[in-house]
Image (cartoon, rainbow, N blue to C red; front, side, top):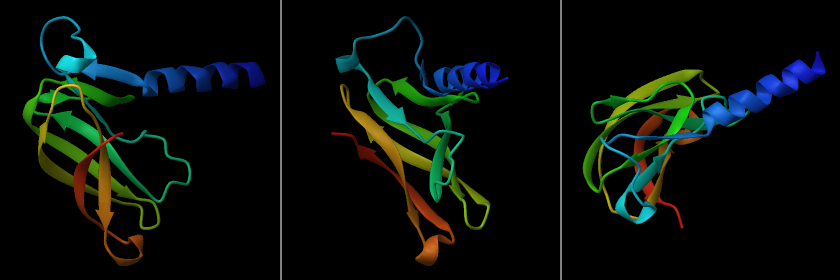
Length: 125
């Protein structure tokens, strides 16, 4: 039983780490695309999480948390989840990204982590 659980957990981690392309054609070198990451769908004990749902017209499936996009302007659809209140706020975020850069979604919250007021895109060093 423990082995089956461990195999299932490993499988979920592999699926949750999937990176997808939102552009047509084959893979491109990292210096030609931008990479945007949201949080994992499963967030054990994390007070705030930002789940990436859609990039432009490309919906992400369950387990897809990182997407490669071409440089330029994009519209992101995200869910901002607050654990304490069990609330989810869906937001549309307009961003501009640059080739070769990696970004992560970051939530801004109201006082006491009671609500998600906005979501921004920050570069990853």
